[in-house]
Length: 246
Image 1 (cartoon, one colour):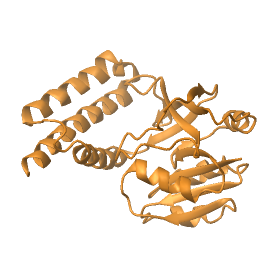
Image 2 (tube, helix red, strand yellow; image 1 turned 90 degrees about the horizontal axis):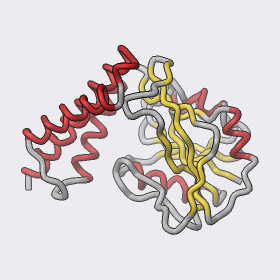
Image 3 (tube, one colour; image 1 turned 45 degrees about the vertical axis):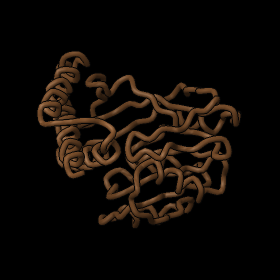
Image 4 (cartoon, helix red, strand yellow; image 1 turned 90 degrees about the vertical axis):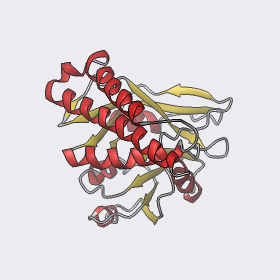
């Protein structure tokens, strides 16, 4: 049996669609880090959801905290804006799970209800299903990963549908949060400066819009490329600031 471990905060726009797709799983651990909207009210209407509240101490630590709360040994880690379509659900439920394997998925990322096939958003894949007696997530604040050890990697055929940004404010909030976490995670590990921040920002735009062909997605590609550039700029600017305080 598979337990779903899901992280959430202010996810009311997507949480119902996400949970509707997971009704055939017997347990969902919803680890919420302070929703101020009606995310939890929606989640309470689903019988297989167990709501737990926690303080945010990094994505990796949160995923491991949720796994410890789960009754099953197999853990599927997803977020509250990631929808498992019927084909992927059926594939998951039919798996002959092997403890020596960790399983991953391809991601279809959407913005403005359009599948984005550029800007580094496609193709994208992540390992998300594992046996908690064999491994766990790294404790990274951001960009956490399942620790692979000597386990085999198996990627499923059907993709997850991911809706990370639904309005411009989502870009701004995530840019602020991820740049903060990057600076904290790399404090005194990487050097930075205003000049480096500018270079990283400019290159991020060039990579996203030109190399990763963001121009093919027209308006959406330009917005995403500007977001990538600003995120890179503020990541290294905040790192420079936090390093200088020592």
